[in-house]
Amino acid sequence: MVHAAKASHIGGCLSMADILAVLYTRILRLDAADPQAASRDRFVLSKGHATAIMYATLAECGFFPLAELDTYCRDGSIFTGHVSHAVPGVEVSTGSLGHGLPIAIGMALAARSAGAGSRVFCLLSDGECDEGSNWEGILFAPHHKLDNLCVIVDFNKIQSFGSVAEVLNLDPFAEKWKAFGWHVEEIDGHDVTALERVLGGVPSPSGRPTVVIAHTVKGKGVSFMENKLEWHYRSPSDELLAQALAEVGA
Amino acid sequence: MRTTFIESLSQAASENPDIWLLCGDLGYSVLEPFAAKFPDRYLNVGVAEQNMAGIAAGIALSGKTVFIYSIGNFPTLRCLEQLRNDVCYHGADVKIVAVGAGYAYGSQGYTHHALEDAGIMSMLPGIEVFVPCDPMEVRAATRLIAGSSKPSYLRLSRQGEPNLGAAVTDLRKPRILREGRDVVILASGPIASRAVEAAGELGRRGRDVGVVSVSCLKPLDEAAIRDAVRGASLVVTLEEHILRGGLFSLVAGAFAGDAKRPQVTGIGIPEQGGKTSSAGSREALLDAAGLSVQAIVARIEQSLPTR
Image (cartoon, rainbow over all chains, first blue to last red; front, side, top):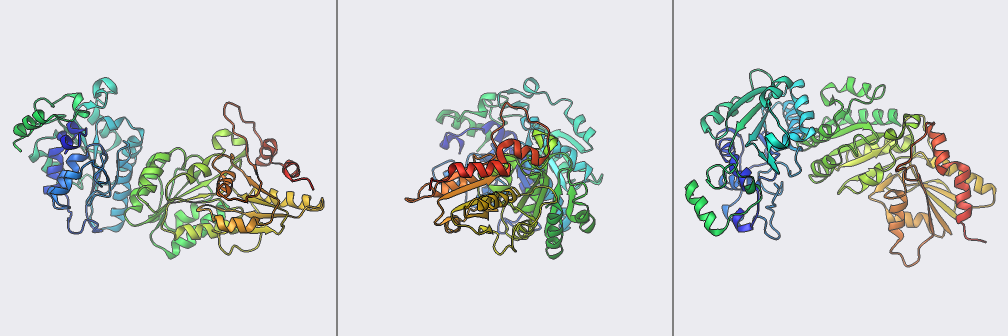
């Protein structure tokens, strides 16, 4: 998709691929035939730029035919370069960072009020944690004991214009969430067994919202993309695409 | 206005269990009756307007009607992008309610003066914008937006505003506060009371001046406004807001394409950039900004075509 459309953000797509795979195959209670069911779990993609992997996941899960992905970023397509709620299965459009968590909190409040047992999962990027609006939400959710809310941070250590450590250091990251009152899980974000274990633990018996700090590798699975800032922007050539596909076994 | 709003909202919430109210840690001595009556649908989110707007969108996208309440610039400008993306782009059923229109917070100073909000809110896609002039219009507006299923902005002043005219029949239409055909003053918000006073003074000077409240800025009923000013030799807009983006811009823009259009004089608050704001009551600040009744009368007399 990214190659065909000469699009970008493939590095941040690959870092979260395993997270989406576990969420959509093992965790989320969703029905592709009835994507608006009131009692569904919600998934909010706050790092809305990592959209190719989001659309691909939804297609694989049957929300729409795989062939529709060929229109990604093409004229007239619903598949825009930042995630769009015009696409079946997408809850909200994002792209400006720091918007997803407050929306997810609202959904978690409404779900708790409805009493249907819905859970809300929200995926943030690490760079996005620079946004103050997230910290408003991080302060709010434990105060209101939103145990049906789970934030996952795709902590790939590289943001838009440099490393997280250089641009605006988040460490000690887990301690910050703990101090705000969250149930914190810190795992290898490519360990699908660990992902299934911690994501399946929502709602947390602690009565607190859960954050999963998922340590990931930007560009995971493709040797020349791994931990390279440039793959936030570049689109692979024909040769590099072939090599990448071979490396991930596609 | 605040009290009328919360009474009207409480009544609407009694009839509709999907109505929620969020506030950004403001509303002392106003919101308590709602909070007491509907504790499960009331939330003080704290001093965090971006979070409040996003939360409101999330609740609304789960099938509810969510009011968010704070002072002037806080639930509007502070979280503008959340309103644009999360609320309006998704068509989320969120109602933004701001108190302290214009100079209502008087001596509290510039940060608490809402001077650009109505124009900025009007620019958002798919939103409806209401600037009521009196408690009767507040009641009608609250009822209307509670059932509209659309993003809405409700701009309130503070307290003690008098009713200015007869019962509101259709809030979306201009409401005649004073009959008159020679000059028609279109006013939005409680500043309309000064329009009525100015019209009275001009009447004593032999002018036939009407006053019309335009409380629905968006969608602006352009046809009804054309009807309201038909035959007038001068149309005046009066607003407690800067001219850019407010009632004057909207009315002048509506007439711009007409082959035969009336002269429009805009009276509003001058832009404040780089100049410090003085302390003063709302009334004193309006006078200083050139919106005293005498100044309004003078501006209209200057603008009138010579007889």
